[in-house]
Length: 149
Image (cartoon, rainbow, N blue to C red; front, side):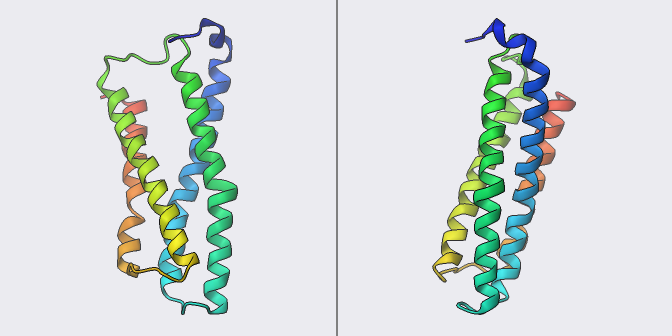
């Protein structure tokens, strides 16, 4: 389904999509790093409670709204005539990486709940490795959209 009436707003949708995506990625780069540091604190300590507040605020006030904005403006772009060539491989590569990013976002939310309940079972090393996931997905998404392999 394509809506020609969206064409005059294409550049606005694109700019807002990039802004939201940038904010989403900034948060996704930082949240697992907070988990690395949170692992180094004792459950119930003042430091642990401070990390819980930081993680909640980052997720609820920055990451989640930015993800929603990325999705909404992305859908508006897709509905704009000429924005997507459905037969192009780059488009499907971006969609797969984006689905994985949504999954990683969900995992980060679950991990935050574990920390919130003082029930984290994962190691600092786990979160150090997890911290690389959004970077790899970010690279794939940007290359898919810009280079269009």
